[in-house]
Image (tube, rainbow, N blue to C red; front, side, top):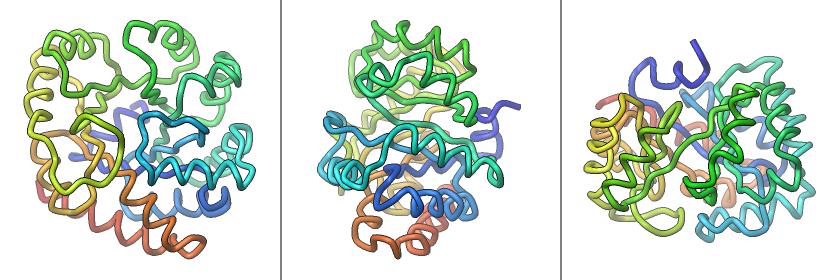
Length: 258
């Protein structure tokens, strides 16, 4: 069974996001182990970038902290290889086109394959231009995850038809960040996807409480949470690990009730 298949094999998946290198790569490594123990099904690691256009202020600030701490893509690959000596949790990278092209597409995907990174999510990659990355991803057994947002029905069907692994469903328009209210468009989006293809759908952007997570798990195959965790890391700094572990356990428990 491929890493991505196992993510959704046991029921509703909980997918936490953290920015690699915030507050340090040492803490990131500890967080990956802690979140694995707490029940995370897939861990999304953000590669810090100076212009993360899909992110709200919480993750933008984490990117700045990580870059100021000297985090590089090579350091992140080294960290994941260390993690792999004891931990086989599925890992996906969240990054942007620019860092991949600057690093070199072939070299980036080869390193993903060697570090057993099973997927990448690239928010600023237009669907029409995905072939630039997709063929290299496929050659190195890395899944390029498709994202859908509240948009035209035809566009959702077109993206779903081409999607692999799972679909990242953006709960509402705009950038990432904690929200009190989540849009209702996402249920309709998922229904459209399922009419086209039997592929898992995970909802992200704005989910922060167990109650929200349970509601979103009721209409999807998984829940992605980033800003709420990154905010906690900013608050507690190097002491964040047990706090994040507790939070992941709570969220996992909430979605398992669905």
